[in-house]
Image 1 (spheres, rainbow, N blue to C red):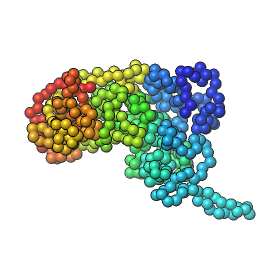
Image 2 (cartoon, one colour; image 1 turned 90 degrees about the horizontal axis):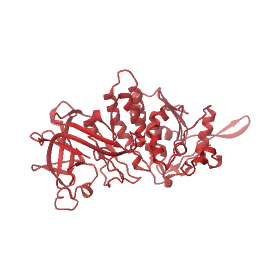
Image 3 (cartoon, helix red, strand yellow; image 1 turned 135 degrees about the horizontal axis):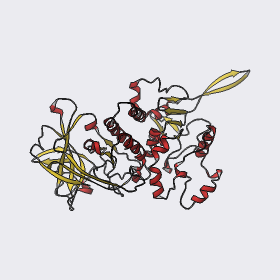
Image 4 (tube, rainbow, N blue to C red; image 1 turned 135 degrees about the vertical axis):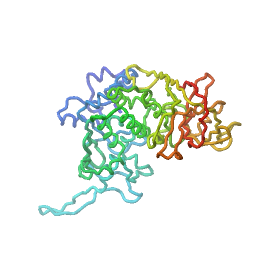
Length: 475
């Protein structure tokens, strides 16, 4: 990957030899010139890659960079930063043929169908694409069941796995996707492909929810309409985080930075305060995330507040962790009258990117607090019975652990674990299906608390009825 560094910055300003530019970038430059545009933005060239301050400054301007662009060029085949998963040509403009080594169901190779015809006295073959649905499904977020060797279908288009691309697609006014099979156009009003099968202007509403990005893009467009308010944005943000959390980064420390452009735009549009991936004005709901699947992981190598959905993310590239807001998103939710956010202190790592990586983050909360005991199958005298169970006054209830068997790396030496009630949620007005939603937190030797997970307690279990209202500082 060609890039700009502090060492070669002056050389980059004077000359970049054409032969050193990757084929995909060369094609992007040809397209830009063909459209009559004078400038092109390529992250690896326009940002000094080993300069943290330049990274922070440019990351903080991503909302402006992509929102004000004329066209976003998306190379769906090219953009895989993982070298062991790169394959095929790296060009955007190329002759289409079979997908090398690609099979459906482990059987037939995808090659153009050859239809013999006679034209002007000559015999020839007309080549017909047999699998345009691959591009359609990738754009629309569907599973097309195609495999490359033993690899899953999602590896066909690496671009759609990249976290940095997520906000680019949402913010850009229009994007053209150069896919294996065909070119696809997406803008604020429609999606179109070359063969005409995907036409966003003709799709029925019940077909669109399969495409998370299209739905989110439509949601952002709707926020610009008269009558939209901050609550509409907060609702959409829960969807945004659930989709974004599945995507990959070569550096997990960029998790907030890669979303900072979108956060910046929404913060200014709705005059709302952003804190480490959450919204201050919707803090109660924002805190009630859970992580699925609940894999064993280790603490992050960089600072993350335990109360934010970015906490504890230290996975391999082959593991994804889906952040869920199902208890507050699909239910009627009400904040408990005893819960309050008394103080929020969250400092960005760089003043140049106030929506990016954070240096510190403390919440001072007040609410109904009960002491519980964690039971787990992983070693230690206090860790008995089944995993992921909390006990209070002899009653047990499972909880959603932030770290899989997190107790082995976080709570093996912690004696004091508590549940802080945040609110109540129910799918219907029937009280029997209501749940009390509480943060599972542990008190550290310093006296501050850290989050361990989320408890959804059936309302009939009245753990919090007589609970004391206590102030806690959560880091």
